[in-house]
Length: 121
Image (cartoon, rainbow, N blue to C red; front, side):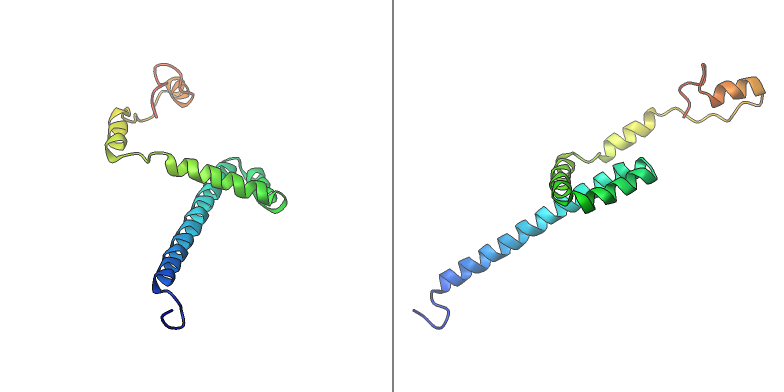
């Protein structure tokens, strides 16, 4: 035995294992938070009822929501973020915006995306 702490390799190993455990816990928490953000974004798109349902689910179904958030976060983490090349390519494909026609009949077709205006964004 060397000193108060025993074998120095044991102490070094325990410190390394502790750091790995902290890293693993923080990684799992970040996946859970990412999943909760994705689920909240979907709930917010549904409006006020979606947000209330999201909060109520966290209050009344905490274990289920925690597991679902982790799973959704893991899936979102696995998803490939769009690259700059794909974003630029997508923008190049978009048609140019046209100004609304002045004729009321044509303007109604333009507003309702009827032909020949169905592809205008």
